[in-house]
Length: 238
Ligand SMILES: [Zn+2]
Image (cartoon, rainbow, N blue to C red; front, side, top):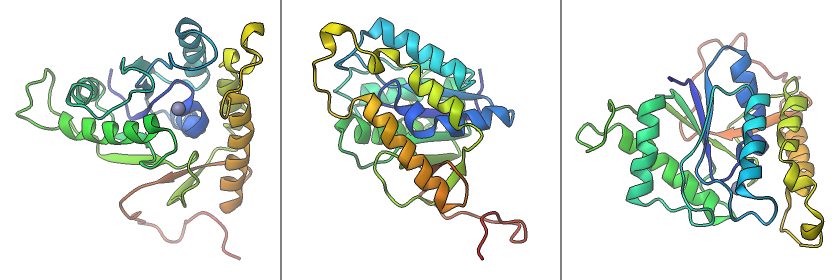
């Protein structure tokens, strides 16, 4: 399978929370999209890996992604090691996405910032001709970074007003995180997903307000944006 757009993140539900609307919007534009979870989220306080796998499959369906996979990196131990970078490069060579979405490179959670480095370096390695790795050398053309979690000033915002409800359903697909079993209910989880959901709603509203729409998803790209048509630029000035 060849993808147009691949979102890579540390844990199942990271992508739903940070760029689910953009994935769905891209699928509706006719692009083939995918999600690569680096870990299975097995260190999560709530739910089991089996339950979370079912939940992430449902979320993928709701976001209309064509492919979802797990790289098998140990949760809470995401590292840009040679072994993980090669595993990621193998997936990149198989899926050949033109554009890749990564987490922002600074974060509270070490898995998130390591996921950013691992993602970037895996994409780079995938293009090396001399690499002792199966598959045709391939390097994505564009790398975008999600800034939703970290609140960094974005370089552009995607209007996800039409996709917002479906994105929310995809987030709520992680039922075990929202409705923990009785035995787990008393546990305190730092920023449990139900709190995250409320926070991501604020982020999406704020991002939307910056471009004059209801909901948006913020991104950062290291390169400058090239514009070819200055007459049809969106976002009203006055
Ligand atoms: Zn995460």
